[in-house]
Amino acid sequence: MGPMSTVRASLPRLGELVRRFNRRWLNPAMLRRAGDRHWYAGFVEHRGRRTGRIRRTPIVAHPVEGGFAVALPYGDRVDWLRNLQASGSGRLRSHGRWYRVDTPRVVPISEVPPGLPRVTRRIAERSAAPWLLLATHPLDGADPTDATRG
Image: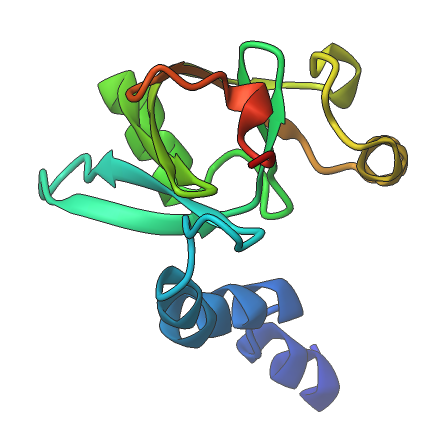
């Protein structure tokens, strides 16, 4: 193994650097506005698997029939998703409303129900990122597909 391969092996991958930056800087900044009525991003509230503490993670949730669709650009092994799947439920705040999340499941883009913006669906079909379908129940009686209206 030459000196260049040693350097490469010791440096974190770019994706890991982006994740660290997001966790340390971007996510806390996003959480200041996430879930507000006129903000594009919401957040998912989940209970930690080991600590039992309530956590909030900013996400971009698109309302679709039966719930919300969320892109998983970092894959399906992210902590917040693993926490939701372990507990079976959580809460989502999107466009000023709270929703209970039940039975979150990862599905291919072809199985995401109608409601996803056309341009978002086209981009998703060209990417290898999996999608998460959050089956939700509104806590205030609102229909998730009305989340961006009003």
